[in-house]
Image (cartoon, rainbow, N blue to C red; front, side, top):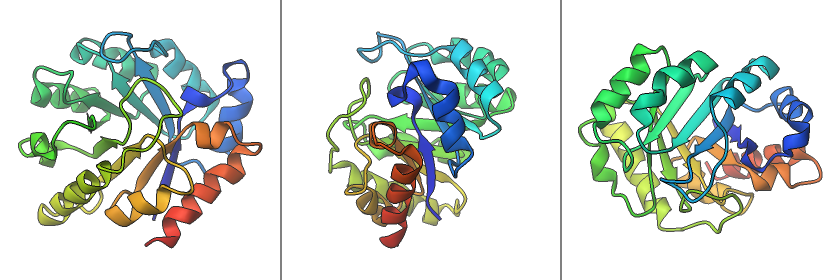
Length: 221
């Protein structure tokens, strides 16, 4: 079953209550919150206060994606803000296993994200400890970028690892350029949780757009 995690990165910040409420009440499985620090990625976005604000708006689980350096220093802060799933980048964390342990110790599900140029092999020694793997199909930092098709091989590789290591419930998430054209490709490769920002929130009807993406992905299975 394909799950959807609309990204508020592309939402109208002046109408977050309305936009988040609408998708939350109409089928969103997660709310994806992109946290950027202007250092690891060339953009600045949200912090713990935004996560706390989202927590007050919806009961849908908050899927918080830390695109920041020194993520270990902020894990407890995002837990207190209300994150349900916390994902860190393998490229930005010095002690990845320790960071995953910290996430679990603070009561959250743990995810690790890989940039387009990062090989899946970095997951080998941490895989059993994860609830989520996020494959970036754009270089992180901005919404609305073009999908990088090389990411499909990485999705398939992680899917194979899930099967080999008996992790059928792992969330295999994809973020970047996901729309009705690319959703079938990532679903066929093995993804089961799709992040979509501009394709959802820039559409005339965000709920219809979200469900169209889900339907396109589901049809490929």
